[in-house]
Image 1 (cartoon, helix red, strand yellow):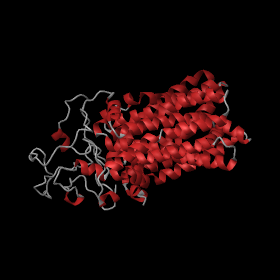
Image 2 (cartoon, one colour; image 1 turned 90 degrees about the horizontal axis):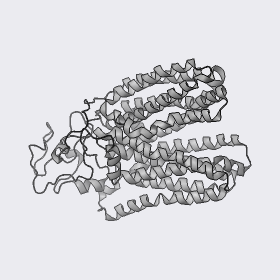
Image 3 (cartoon, rainbow, N blue to C red; image 1 turned 45 degrees about the vertical axis):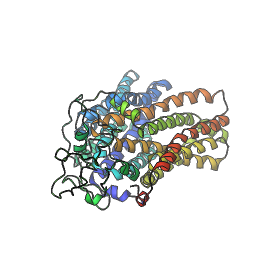
Image 4 (cartoon, one colour; image 1 turned 60 degrees about the vertical axis):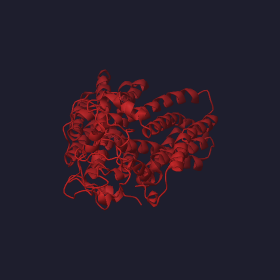
Length: 509
Protein backbone atom coordinates (compact mmCIF):
# COMPACT_ATOMS: atom_id res chain seq x y z
CA UNK A 1 0.00 0.00 0.00
CA UNK A 2 1.38 3.44 -0.89
CA UNK A 3 2.15 5.88 1.90
CA UNK A 4 1.93 8.95 -0.29
CA UNK A 5 -0.78 10.43 1.88
CA UNK A 6 1.39 9.94 4.96
CA UNK A 7 4.23 11.89 3.33
CA UNK A 8 1.90 14.68 2.25
CA UNK A 9 0.52 15.00 5.78
CA UNK A 10 4.03 15.68 7.10
CA UNK A 11 4.58 19.44 7.21
CA UNK A 12 8.28 19.38 6.39
CA UNK A 13 7.89 16.89 3.54
CA UNK A 14 5.01 18.92 2.13
CA UNK A 15 6.99 22.17 2.22
CA UNK A 16 10.06 20.56 0.64
CA UNK A 17 7.98 19.08 -2.17
CA UNK A 18 6.23 22.38 -2.81
CA UNK A 19 9.57 24.18 -2.91
CA UNK A 20 10.81 21.61 -5.42
CA UNK A 21 7.75 22.18 -7.62
CA UNK A 22 8.06 25.97 -7.54
CA UNK A 23 11.81 26.24 -8.14
CA UNK A 24 11.79 23.30 -10.59
CA UNK A 25 9.21 25.10 -12.73
CA UNK A 26 11.45 28.15 -13.08
CA UNK A 27 14.57 26.04 -13.70
CA UNK A 28 12.94 24.03 -16.48
CA UNK A 29 11.62 27.19 -18.12
CA UNK A 30 15.04 28.88 -18.02
CA UNK A 31 16.81 25.74 -19.26
CA UNK A 32 14.94 25.91 -22.56
CA UNK A 33 14.71 29.68 -22.93
CA UNK A 34 18.41 30.37 -22.30
CA UNK A 35 19.54 28.35 -25.32
CA UNK A 36 16.91 29.92 -27.56
CA UNK A 37 17.86 33.38 -26.25
CA UNK A 38 21.57 32.97 -26.99
CA UNK A 39 20.79 31.46 -30.41
CA UNK A 40 18.64 34.48 -31.30
CA UNK A 41 21.30 36.93 -30.16
CA UNK A 42 24.34 35.31 -31.78
CA UNK A 43 23.06 32.86 -34.37
CA UNK A 44 25.60 30.36 -33.00
CA UNK A 45 24.56 26.79 -32.25
CA UNK A 46 27.78 26.28 -30.29
CA UNK A 47 27.10 29.16 -27.90
CA UNK A 48 23.54 27.97 -27.44
CA UNK A 49 24.84 24.52 -26.50
CA UNK A 50 27.22 26.12 -24.00
CA UNK A 51 24.18 27.23 -21.97
CA UNK A 52 23.38 23.64 -21.10
CA UNK A 53 27.05 22.90 -20.44
CA UNK A 54 27.35 25.91 -18.11
CA UNK A 55 24.42 24.69 -16.01
CA UNK A 56 25.67 21.10 -15.92
CA UNK A 57 29.46 21.56 -15.51
CA UNK A 58 29.40 22.30 -11.73
CA UNK A 59 28.09 18.79 -11.14
CA UNK A 60 31.65 17.57 -11.73
CA UNK A 61 32.68 19.44 -8.57
CA UNK A 62 29.99 17.71 -6.50
CA UNK A 63 32.34 16.30 -3.81
CA UNK A 64 33.77 19.79 -3.23
CA UNK A 65 30.52 21.74 -3.38
CA UNK A 66 28.67 19.17 -1.28
CA UNK A 67 31.08 19.82 1.60
CA UNK A 68 29.36 23.16 2.11
CA UNK A 69 26.18 21.31 3.09
CA UNK A 70 28.17 19.63 5.90
CA UNK A 71 29.81 22.85 7.11
CA UNK A 72 26.74 25.09 7.34
CA UNK A 73 23.27 24.57 8.79
CA UNK A 74 21.18 23.27 5.94
CA UNK A 75 17.95 25.21 6.34
CA UNK A 76 19.70 28.63 6.19
CA UNK A 77 21.76 27.27 3.29
CA UNK A 78 18.61 26.43 1.32
CA UNK A 79 17.11 29.84 2.04
CA UNK A 80 20.34 31.69 1.24
CA UNK A 81 20.91 29.77 -2.00
CA UNK A 82 17.39 30.51 -3.21
CA UNK A 83 17.72 34.23 -2.38
CA UNK A 84 21.14 34.37 -4.06
CA UNK A 85 19.68 33.13 -7.34
CA UNK A 86 16.66 35.41 -6.96
CA UNK A 87 19.05 38.38 -6.70
CA UNK A 88 21.37 37.14 -9.47
CA UNK A 89 18.87 36.36 -12.22
CA UNK A 90 17.72 39.99 -12.75
CA UNK A 91 21.30 40.69 -13.97
CA UNK A 92 20.15 39.03 -17.20
CA UNK A 93 17.93 42.06 -17.89
CA UNK A 94 21.09 43.79 -19.12
CA UNK A 95 21.64 41.21 -21.86
CA UNK A 96 20.41 42.74 -25.10
CA UNK A 97 23.40 42.45 -27.46
CA UNK A 98 25.66 39.56 -28.53
CA UNK A 99 28.67 40.98 -26.68
CA UNK A 100 26.85 40.47 -23.35
CA UNK A 101 26.16 36.78 -23.83
CA UNK A 102 29.01 36.09 -21.39
CA UNK A 103 26.69 37.35 -18.66
CA UNK A 104 24.20 34.60 -19.50
CA UNK A 105 26.87 31.91 -19.35
CA UNK A 106 28.29 33.25 -16.07
CA UNK A 107 24.89 33.41 -14.39
CA UNK A 108 24.06 29.90 -15.60
CA UNK A 109 27.36 28.58 -14.22
CA UNK A 110 26.65 30.08 -10.78
CA UNK A 111 23.11 28.77 -11.14
CA UNK A 112 24.40 25.23 -11.67
CA UNK A 113 26.89 25.42 -8.78
CA UNK A 114 24.21 26.69 -6.42
CA UNK A 115 21.94 23.90 -7.59
CA UNK A 116 24.54 21.26 -6.63
CA UNK A 117 24.80 22.69 -3.11
CA UNK A 118 21.03 23.08 -2.94
CA UNK A 119 20.40 19.44 -3.86
CA UNK A 120 22.95 18.18 -1.33
CA UNK A 121 21.58 20.33 1.50
CA UNK A 122 17.96 19.50 0.67
CA UNK A 123 18.54 15.75 0.52
CA UNK A 124 20.50 15.82 3.78
CA UNK A 125 17.84 17.90 5.51
CA UNK A 126 15.05 15.62 4.33
CA UNK A 127 16.94 12.53 5.54
CA UNK A 128 16.60 13.75 9.12
CA UNK A 129 13.23 15.47 8.88
CA UNK A 130 11.32 12.57 7.27
CA UNK A 131 10.91 9.15 8.88
CA UNK A 132 13.41 6.65 7.38
CA UNK A 133 10.60 4.31 6.30
CA UNK A 134 9.10 7.12 4.18
CA UNK A 135 12.27 8.27 2.40
CA UNK A 136 11.54 6.10 -0.62
CA UNK A 137 8.04 7.55 -0.90
CA UNK A 138 9.38 11.10 -0.59
CA UNK A 139 12.10 10.58 -3.20
CA UNK A 140 9.58 9.01 -5.54
CA UNK A 141 7.21 11.94 -5.12
CA UNK A 142 10.06 14.36 -5.75
CA UNK A 143 10.89 12.49 -8.97
CA UNK A 144 7.24 12.58 -10.00
CA UNK A 145 6.87 16.33 -9.50
CA UNK A 146 10.24 17.05 -11.15
CA UNK A 147 9.33 15.04 -14.23
CA UNK A 148 5.88 16.63 -14.24
CA UNK A 149 7.50 20.07 -14.32
CA UNK A 150 9.60 18.98 -17.32
CA UNK A 151 6.37 18.33 -19.21
CA UNK A 152 4.80 21.70 -18.42
CA UNK A 153 7.51 24.26 -17.71
CA UNK A 154 9.40 24.20 -21.07
CA UNK A 155 6.17 24.95 -22.92
CA UNK A 156 5.35 27.76 -20.51
CA UNK A 157 8.90 29.10 -20.79
CA UNK A 158 8.76 29.02 -24.59
CA UNK A 159 5.45 30.89 -24.56
CA UNK A 160 6.74 33.47 -22.12
CA UNK A 161 9.91 33.92 -24.16
CA UNK A 162 7.86 34.50 -27.30
CA UNK A 163 5.95 37.31 -25.58
CA UNK A 164 8.49 38.93 -23.25
CA UNK A 165 11.84 37.53 -24.37
CA UNK A 166 14.65 36.17 -22.21
CA UNK A 167 14.38 38.84 -19.46
CA UNK A 168 10.78 37.82 -18.82
CA UNK A 169 11.78 34.20 -18.25
CA UNK A 170 14.65 35.28 -15.97
CA UNK A 171 12.28 37.37 -13.83
CA UNK A 172 9.84 34.45 -13.62
CA UNK A 173 12.63 32.17 -12.41
CA UNK A 174 13.75 34.77 -9.85
CA UNK A 175 10.21 34.95 -8.50
CA UNK A 176 10.04 31.18 -8.11
CA UNK A 177 13.19 31.24 -5.98
CA UNK A 178 11.73 33.95 -3.74
CA UNK A 179 8.68 31.75 -3.20
CA UNK A 180 10.89 28.70 -2.57
CA UNK A 181 12.91 30.62 0.04
CA UNK A 182 9.67 31.44 1.85
CA UNK A 183 8.66 27.79 1.83
CA UNK A 184 12.02 26.66 3.20
CA UNK A 185 11.77 29.30 5.92
CA UNK A 186 8.62 27.54 7.13
CA UNK A 187 10.42 24.25 7.79
CA UNK A 188 10.33 23.25 11.46
CA UNK A 189 13.73 21.71 12.02
CA UNK A 190 16.37 21.77 14.70
CA UNK A 191 19.98 21.69 13.59
CA UNK A 192 23.04 21.60 15.78
CA UNK A 193 25.92 23.79 14.73
CA UNK A 194 28.15 21.74 12.40
CA UNK A 195 31.64 21.13 13.73
CA UNK A 196 34.79 21.74 11.68
CA UNK A 197 36.39 18.85 9.80
CA UNK A 198 39.10 16.47 11.14
CA UNK A 199 38.36 15.46 14.72
CA UNK A 200 39.53 12.09 16.03
CA UNK A 201 37.47 9.11 14.83
CA UNK A 202 34.48 8.19 16.96
CA UNK A 203 34.68 5.06 19.06
CA UNK A 204 32.11 2.32 19.12
CA UNK A 205 30.56 3.65 22.33
CA UNK A 206 30.41 7.16 20.90
CA UNK A 207 28.61 5.80 17.86
CA UNK A 208 26.02 4.26 20.11
CA UNK A 209 25.31 7.58 21.86
CA UNK A 210 24.27 9.58 18.79
CA UNK A 211 21.25 8.75 16.68
CA UNK A 212 20.95 9.95 13.10
CA UNK A 213 24.50 11.30 13.03
CA UNK A 214 26.10 7.91 13.69
CA UNK A 215 25.99 4.62 11.90
CA UNK A 216 23.11 4.56 9.47
CA UNK A 217 20.13 2.47 10.55
CA UNK A 218 19.45 -0.89 8.93
CA UNK A 219 16.14 -1.02 7.17
CA UNK A 220 15.52 -4.74 6.69
CA UNK A 221 14.63 -7.40 9.21
CA UNK A 222 17.50 -9.73 8.34
CA UNK A 223 20.06 -6.99 8.86
CA UNK A 224 18.41 -5.96 12.13
CA UNK A 225 18.57 -9.54 13.41
CA UNK A 226 22.21 -9.91 12.45
CA UNK A 227 23.14 -6.80 14.42
CA UNK A 228 20.97 -7.20 17.47
CA UNK A 229 22.80 -8.42 20.58
CA UNK A 230 21.99 -12.01 21.65
CA UNK A 231 19.20 -12.02 24.13
CA UNK A 232 17.74 -8.70 23.04
CA UNK A 233 14.46 -8.73 21.19
CA UNK A 234 14.35 -5.72 18.88
CA UNK A 235 10.68 -4.89 19.30
CA UNK A 236 9.60 -1.29 18.75
CA UNK A 237 7.49 -1.39 21.93
CA UNK A 238 10.52 -1.97 24.12
CA UNK A 239 12.70 0.73 22.63
CA UNK A 240 13.01 3.89 24.70
CA UNK A 241 11.90 6.92 22.78
CA UNK A 242 13.68 10.23 23.00
CA UNK A 243 11.35 13.18 23.67
CA UNK A 244 12.48 14.59 20.34
CA UNK A 245 11.90 11.46 18.28
CA UNK A 246 8.62 9.59 18.66
CA UNK A 247 7.26 7.27 15.99
CA UNK A 248 3.56 7.41 15.26
CA UNK A 249 1.24 4.63 14.22
CA UNK A 250 1.12 5.73 10.61
CA UNK A 251 4.87 5.45 10.18
CA UNK A 252 5.72 9.12 10.49
CA UNK A 253 8.31 10.53 12.83
CA UNK A 254 7.56 13.47 15.07
CA UNK A 255 11.25 14.34 15.10
CA UNK A 256 12.46 17.04 12.75
CA UNK A 257 16.08 17.10 13.83
CA UNK A 258 18.37 16.20 10.95
CA UNK A 259 21.22 15.62 13.35
CA UNK A 260 19.38 13.59 15.97
CA UNK A 261 16.35 12.27 14.21
CA UNK A 262 17.06 8.53 14.41
CA UNK A 263 17.35 6.75 17.75
CA UNK A 264 20.05 4.21 18.59
CA UNK A 265 18.32 0.91 18.01
CA UNK A 266 19.98 -1.50 20.39
CA UNK A 267 21.00 0.72 23.33
CA UNK A 268 18.93 -1.24 25.90
CA UNK A 269 20.57 -3.93 28.01
CA UNK A 270 19.38 -7.49 27.74
CA UNK A 271 19.04 -7.97 31.49
CA UNK A 272 17.43 -4.63 32.37
CA UNK A 273 14.17 -3.20 30.95
CA UNK A 274 14.45 0.39 29.81
CA UNK A 275 13.05 3.13 31.99
CA UNK A 276 10.23 5.05 30.34
CA UNK A 277 11.68 8.31 31.71
CA UNK A 278 15.19 8.20 30.31
CA UNK A 279 17.26 6.92 27.41
CA UNK A 280 19.80 4.32 28.55
CA UNK A 281 23.35 5.60 28.40
CA UNK A 282 25.96 3.24 26.96
CA UNK A 283 28.52 4.83 29.29
CA UNK A 284 26.73 3.66 32.43
CA UNK A 285 25.82 0.27 30.99
CA UNK A 286 28.94 -1.86 30.50
CA UNK A 287 28.65 -4.47 27.81
CA UNK A 288 28.26 -8.00 28.93
CA UNK A 289 29.55 -11.05 27.12
CA UNK A 290 26.14 -11.39 25.46
CA UNK A 291 26.03 -7.81 24.20
CA UNK A 292 28.49 -7.28 21.39
CA UNK A 293 29.00 -3.87 19.78
CA UNK A 294 27.64 -3.02 16.39
CA UNK A 295 29.93 -4.11 13.54
CA UNK A 296 32.02 -1.43 11.94
CA UNK A 297 30.91 -2.09 8.37
CA UNK A 298 29.37 1.42 8.36
CA UNK A 299 31.85 3.35 10.52
CA UNK A 300 31.09 6.91 11.47
CA UNK A 301 33.60 9.24 9.86
CA UNK A 302 35.39 11.92 11.83
CA UNK A 303 33.58 15.21 12.25
CA UNK A 304 36.38 16.89 10.32
CA UNK A 305 36.65 14.60 7.35
CA UNK A 306 38.53 15.41 4.13
CA UNK A 307 36.58 16.54 1.11
CA UNK A 308 37.17 13.15 -0.49
CA UNK A 309 35.54 11.29 2.39
CA UNK A 310 32.27 11.07 0.46
CA UNK A 311 33.99 9.08 -2.31
CA UNK A 312 35.68 6.79 0.21
CA UNK A 313 32.45 6.19 2.09
CA UNK A 314 30.54 5.21 -1.05
CA UNK A 315 33.34 3.03 -2.42
CA UNK A 316 33.81 1.12 0.85
CA UNK A 317 30.10 0.63 1.49
CA UNK A 318 28.80 -2.79 0.34
CA UNK A 319 25.31 -1.44 -0.38
CA UNK A 320 26.07 1.96 -1.88
CA UNK A 321 28.94 1.01 -4.21
CA UNK A 322 26.99 -1.39 -6.49
CA UNK A 323 24.01 0.96 -6.60
CA UNK A 324 26.09 4.02 -7.52
CA UNK A 325 28.06 2.05 -10.13
CA UNK A 326 24.81 0.75 -11.62
CA UNK A 327 23.42 4.29 -11.64
CA UNK A 328 26.47 5.67 -13.45
CA UNK A 329 26.40 2.86 -16.01
CA UNK A 330 22.68 3.38 -16.52
CA UNK A 331 23.15 7.09 -17.20
CA UNK A 332 25.99 6.31 -19.62
CA UNK A 333 23.65 4.02 -21.55
CA UNK A 334 20.88 6.61 -21.27
CA UNK A 335 23.15 9.13 -22.98
CA UNK A 336 23.82 6.68 -25.80
CA UNK A 337 20.10 5.98 -26.10
CA UNK A 338 19.27 9.68 -26.16
CA UNK A 339 21.73 10.29 -28.99
CA UNK A 340 19.89 7.67 -31.07
CA UNK A 341 16.47 9.27 -30.63
CA UNK A 342 16.30 11.22 -33.89
CA UNK A 343 17.64 8.23 -35.82
CA UNK A 344 14.76 6.21 -34.33
CA UNK A 345 12.33 8.90 -35.47
CA UNK A 346 13.80 8.84 -38.98
CA UNK A 347 13.31 5.07 -39.06
CA UNK A 348 9.65 5.59 -38.21
CA UNK A 349 9.26 8.06 -41.08
CA UNK A 350 8.31 11.06 -38.93
CA UNK A 351 9.63 14.60 -38.68
CA UNK A 352 11.89 15.60 -35.76
CA UNK A 353 8.88 17.20 -34.04
CA UNK A 354 7.69 13.65 -33.23
CA UNK A 355 10.27 13.73 -30.44
CA UNK A 356 7.81 15.85 -28.46
CA UNK A 357 5.30 12.99 -28.36
CA UNK A 358 7.96 10.47 -27.33
CA UNK A 359 9.27 12.78 -24.58
CA UNK A 360 5.75 13.37 -23.29
CA UNK A 361 5.06 9.63 -23.02
CA UNK A 362 8.45 9.06 -21.38
CA UNK A 363 7.71 11.79 -18.84
CA UNK A 364 4.37 10.21 -18.02
CA UNK A 365 6.15 6.92 -17.28
CA UNK A 366 8.56 8.69 -14.92
CA UNK A 367 5.70 10.35 -13.06
CA UNK A 368 3.95 7.00 -12.64
CA UNK A 369 7.00 5.19 -11.26
CA UNK A 370 7.69 8.10 -8.93
CA UNK A 371 4.29 7.64 -7.32
CA UNK A 372 4.82 3.89 -6.94
CA UNK A 373 8.46 3.86 -5.85
CA UNK A 374 7.75 3.83 -2.10
CA UNK A 375 5.80 0.55 -2.07
CA UNK A 376 8.20 -0.95 -4.63
CA UNK A 377 11.22 -0.12 -2.48
CA UNK A 378 9.59 -1.67 0.59
CA UNK A 379 8.79 -4.83 -1.32
CA UNK A 380 11.95 -5.25 -3.41
CA UNK A 381 14.60 -3.34 -1.50
CA UNK A 382 16.98 -0.86 -3.10
CA UNK A 383 18.92 -3.46 -5.12
CA UNK A 384 15.84 -5.25 -6.38
CA UNK A 385 14.03 -2.04 -7.32
CA UNK A 386 17.09 -0.77 -9.19
CA UNK A 387 17.69 -4.11 -10.94
CA UNK A 388 14.13 -4.46 -12.24
CA UNK A 389 14.11 -0.82 -13.37
CA UNK A 390 17.35 -1.27 -15.32
CA UNK A 391 16.02 -4.47 -16.90
CA UNK A 392 12.81 -2.78 -18.06
CA UNK A 393 14.75 0.16 -19.50
CA UNK A 394 17.27 -2.07 -21.28
CA UNK A 395 14.62 -4.21 -22.93
CA UNK A 396 12.72 -1.11 -24.08
CA UNK A 397 15.88 0.46 -25.51
CA UNK A 398 16.69 -2.74 -27.42
CA UNK A 399 13.18 -3.02 -28.85
CA UNK A 400 13.55 0.41 -30.45
CA UNK A 401 15.39 -1.44 -33.21
CA UNK A 402 11.95 -2.52 -34.48
CA UNK A 403 10.31 0.28 -36.54
CA UNK A 404 6.79 0.47 -35.18
CA UNK A 405 4.87 3.52 -33.96
CA UNK A 406 2.89 1.75 -31.19
CA UNK A 407 6.03 -0.07 -30.03
CA UNK A 408 8.01 3.17 -30.02
CA UNK A 409 5.45 4.80 -27.74
CA UNK A 410 5.38 1.79 -25.41
CA UNK A 411 9.17 1.71 -25.28
CA UNK A 412 9.30 5.41 -24.45
CA UNK A 413 6.88 4.91 -21.57
CA UNK A 414 8.88 1.91 -20.33
CA UNK A 415 12.14 3.86 -20.49
CA UNK A 416 10.53 6.69 -18.55
CA UNK A 417 9.33 4.25 -15.90
CA UNK A 418 12.51 2.21 -15.62
CA UNK A 419 15.21 4.86 -15.81
CA UNK A 420 14.48 6.67 -12.51
CA UNK A 421 14.37 3.45 -10.47
CA UNK A 422 18.12 3.10 -9.92
CA UNK A 423 18.43 6.84 -9.22
CA UNK A 424 15.67 6.78 -6.59
CA UNK A 425 17.06 3.61 -5.04
CA UNK A 426 20.61 4.99 -4.88
CA UNK A 427 19.57 8.31 -3.32
CA UNK A 428 17.38 6.57 -0.75
CA UNK A 429 20.21 4.20 0.16
CA UNK A 430 22.67 7.08 0.54
CA UNK A 431 20.27 8.91 2.84
CA UNK A 432 19.70 5.82 4.98
CA UNK A 433 23.26 4.50 5.11
CA UNK A 434 25.31 7.68 5.58
CA UNK A 435 26.11 9.49 8.83
CA UNK A 436 24.64 12.97 9.05
CA UNK A 437 28.03 14.70 9.29
CA UNK A 438 28.96 13.24 5.88
CA UNK A 439 25.58 13.26 4.14
CA UNK A 440 25.97 16.47 2.11
CA UNK A 441 29.23 15.28 0.54
CA UNK A 442 27.90 11.77 -0.01
CA UNK A 443 24.77 12.99 -1.85
CA UNK A 444 26.73 15.41 -4.04
CA UNK A 445 29.38 12.76 -4.79
CA UNK A 446 26.73 10.19 -5.69
CA UNK A 447 25.08 12.69 -8.06
CA UNK A 448 28.42 13.38 -9.73
CA UNK A 449 29.25 9.69 -10.16
CA UNK A 450 25.82 8.89 -11.57
CA UNK A 451 25.10 11.88 -13.82
CA UNK A 452 28.54 12.72 -15.22
CA UNK A 453 28.62 9.60 -17.47
CA UNK A 454 25.48 10.83 -19.21
CA UNK A 455 27.42 13.47 -21.13
CA UNK A 456 30.02 10.92 -22.19
CA UNK A 457 27.23 8.69 -23.45
CA UNK A 458 25.74 11.55 -25.47
CA UNK A 459 29.13 12.28 -27.05
CA UNK A 460 29.83 8.63 -27.93
CA UNK A 461 26.32 8.13 -29.27
CA UNK A 462 26.59 11.24 -31.45
CA UNK A 463 29.83 9.88 -32.90
CA UNK A 464 28.37 6.43 -33.64
CA UNK A 465 24.93 7.30 -34.96
CA UNK A 466 26.31 8.91 -38.13
CA UNK A 467 28.41 6.09 -39.65
CA UNK A 468 26.39 3.18 -38.17
CA UNK A 469 22.80 2.11 -38.55
CA UNK A 470 20.51 2.79 -35.58
CA UNK A 471 18.89 -0.66 -35.47
CA UNK A 472 21.93 -2.79 -34.61
CA UNK A 473 23.14 -0.04 -32.28
CA UNK A 474 19.86 -0.13 -30.35
CA UNK A 475 19.90 -3.92 -30.16
CA UNK A 476 23.49 -4.05 -28.87
CA UNK A 477 22.82 -1.23 -26.43
CA UNK A 478 19.85 -3.12 -24.98
CA UNK A 479 21.95 -6.25 -24.37
CA UNK A 480 24.85 -4.31 -22.79
CA UNK A 481 22.45 -2.28 -20.66
CA UNK A 482 20.67 -5.41 -19.46
CA UNK A 483 24.01 -6.88 -18.33
CA UNK A 484 24.44 -4.04 -15.83
CA UNK A 485 21.46 -5.33 -13.86
CA UNK A 486 22.91 -8.83 -13.42
CA UNK A 487 25.19 -7.98 -10.44
CA UNK A 488 22.27 -6.42 -8.58
CA UNK A 489 20.11 -9.50 -9.14
CA UNK A 490 22.96 -11.79 -8.05
CA UNK A 491 23.64 -9.87 -4.85
CA UNK A 492 19.96 -9.84 -4.02
CA UNK A 493 19.66 -13.59 -4.60
CA UNK A 494 22.77 -14.33 -2.51
CA UNK A 495 21.45 -12.29 0.38
CA UNK A 496 18.10 -14.09 0.26
CA UNK A 497 19.77 -17.51 0.36
CA UNK A 498 21.85 -16.83 3.46
CA UNK A 499 19.34 -14.75 5.39
CA UNK A 500 17.52 -16.60 8.20
CA UNK A 501 13.79 -16.91 7.77
CA UNK A 502 11.16 -15.92 10.27
CA UNK A 503 7.60 -14.59 10.18
CA UNK A 504 8.96 -11.04 10.53
CA UNK A 505 10.45 -11.30 7.04
CA UNK A 506 6.98 -10.70 5.66
CA UNK A 507 7.20 -7.06 6.78
CA UNK A 508 10.56 -5.67 5.58
CA UNK A 509 9.57 -2.12 6.41
